[in-house]
Image (cartoon, rainbow, N blue to C red; front, side, top):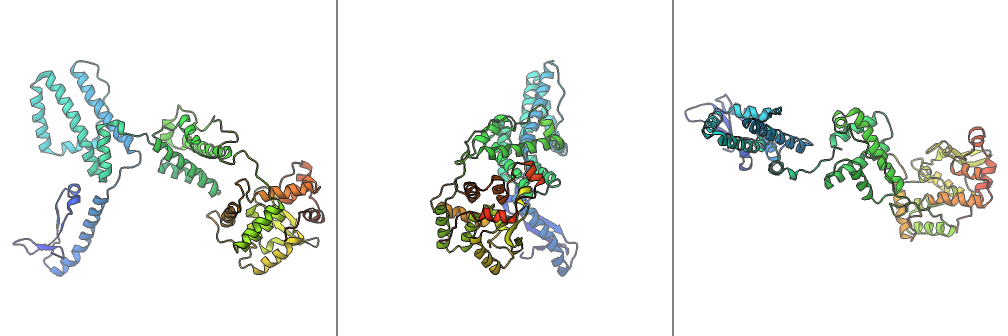
Length: 486
């Protein structure tokens, strides 16, 4: 029967037939699927069978793959089991004349399934009559037997209603036999985090910040599930201690938790009810001072001229000209790595006859600045302007999902630094510290040094009312940085 068509004996009508694989027969409840095609013409039957066969194959696949219970099902199973236990406990109390408390409602699915089977109802009534003949002892034993019967029906009914995967069906059975098998599940569920993300995205365009908050809470959720811990102060404290992070980073994790907590207490009715009498577990933590990660609480090291030369020569030895140029830019400007990677040919402007970099606003108002190009850097800038194919001066292989151009070259610099024997306290940002230090040591006024690197001066008169130093003054200051050519 390669085409799945048959005709029953004595009939001209065609039927489509499919044998159900053995591994899913118990889930579909049949060994064979068969359906009339309502035609005696084989050609019509061949066409009519196709959608039916496709539907059957889909049913078999669904039965084989299973449809798992929704998130948080363990708590629902425990509640159902508790309610059933309470029902029969109350009935026992009623038998001996004790006060009967309000009965929890019986699960409608179980009740309907019982009533839908006349044979079951008849057998059940006969079973009850036999037990009632034994007096009070029989009634008590009847209630105990009924309790066990109802409990054993839960996995079967759920298995059919939700078409559970075998592994989850086994987990349901184990949970009912021994409630201690139940692990506390994190309230930071996938669905809840999806709703939190949508809320945040509707009110902010800072995708990176939102991603970080969601990622941190997802890591907390994983920690709570693995440890079987509830969401409380002690669990959050244990989570913080499990991470090798700086105090500042740990603080950001706590802020992400508070953001989720505040949102959920306002907009998530289930969460609000669950934690209505609880305090925010993300507040009141004493973070380590100078502890956490390997470099936490330690000042970044500056690069000496010899250090910078060593790094540049290492980049050239690796035939990495863009990284070598970036090191030169860092040495002669003290600019942030992303600022440098965003410099374009249009960023090279002339002010008062002096060629300058026009840095747009990035991290703060002070980051928007015009900085004269160090004379030793001009030949490199001219070459990069000539060779640029995308208008940017520093070519990079790629940018990350937040359109951060420095992502790949920053990683490359980290590898170069480590291979050259520098510690983790030496980062690209160390060039910024180097430039500020060298300018101050060169008797450049502090406010001018801060202007050049894009820092607030801290002076209201200067930051608000002053137009800043002249281009000539800035060039004289920047020219005090030692030459890196060798």
